[in-house]
Image 1 (cartoon, rainbow, N blue to C red):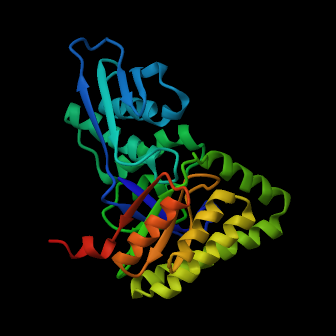
Image 2: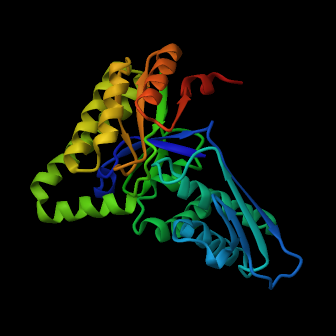
Length: 308
């Protein structure tokens, strides 16, 4: 499934906490069908690509690697498979598409061969595939896209977070692809060049994430919204926002959002906005569409929690 990072983008790489939420209404599925001839080249049908697995474009590297690590774990060759993925959300938007696809493919491969794996083993395999896509992933995407609950993540480990928030999260796609690898690399270079200045920004983002975890537990919508606005400002100072993301977060606030920020790596991708009511969320989503968003989704975690 998809995910959004509520707080902790970039700072999580430096040992600070992050808070992320799985979006159970946006699914990623994968099917794996063994070919009649085991030695036949494996094929992949993913996004706009349909062809031999070993000829897939670079953007599908984590999916290709997912097949390899899963077949290796299962003790089978990575040939003779027909792999298909399907998603309700676009790739390269900070919604965890790469990790979700890798995790879904790994599970589908293991299911095809009847090989069980523990949650920890599935996480480790997904992380191995994700290193191909992102170089040094924190593990947050791999964990959250497979989680049933919000995740509090720090130092490579995550725990389920009790969220008692009566609010709506609006997700809006800027229409531009983001690049986590690029922005993470740029922040790292900035940190190496100006460790005190950049380190102070990362520390502030970490403190915001820590406080936000408590706001989620207590359901303090106002405090959470203020932290979202503060986090976006700090991320912009880090250089990972852009004019489009700034304009969209401004449009969300003008439409009544309690808070709004970019989510994910930045410089493209999505923003998230917090709404007090379903009507507010619908109005904010409409305003974001008017502001140029190529797609919007609304997620209400408290309604899902109340569902039987």
